[in-house]
Image (cartoon, rainbow, N blue to C red; front, top):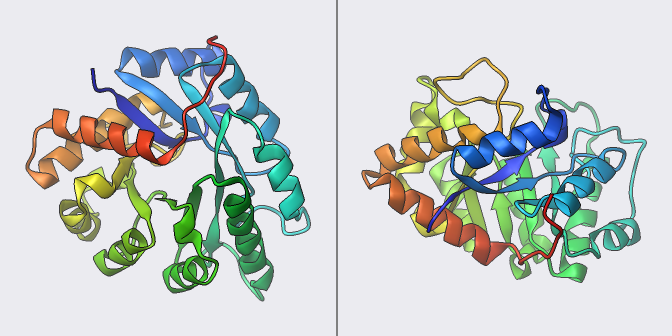
Length: 261
């Protein structure tokens, strides 16, 4: 039976009575069958990994967010070592963010290239963060041959042309709760045109809660509202969106063998 998948969340950052276990249980009760808990730095990666090890419905990624402290650089070898684990299904999140970072950002571009090269070595897909940097993101993905592993453009907010370029590079387009916002008409137009077979859905929780929870803490259980909005925009049944995004996720990310919590 098809089920919802939250392809991008940060469970350790969600504040909840009962902790991560309560967040995961609430998601399962809402019909979410799997969650990809995404790494943002090496300091908190052990928490991400522990969740994937102890819950069959959770997978992990490893990577350093482009806005993380530039003094905490990592090597390709470090990524390779951490990614050599069945619970780790992706490299990232990585990419470029020209909105929050200022000055000479060559360090950010080099960090991005390091992640892409590591992904190629372990043959695992990439999770891409792109904010006000779409031209450079696409350029670097192409230059580094990222199409060989593919991945996902997480929390997509760019235009349709960028989406098409990413799809041509073997990347899926993932929509978050932003697509439900009333002031997101331009993004909604993009979401209406991206093929379902190139799409994922996510929460990016605890951030960007969808309507009707906008402004509150987000959690994986709310990914259903993203799916419902996509179904509305694409003018298809919700079941079709759920089935398509589940298939896309399972085709993109390798299976994992973990111990159920």
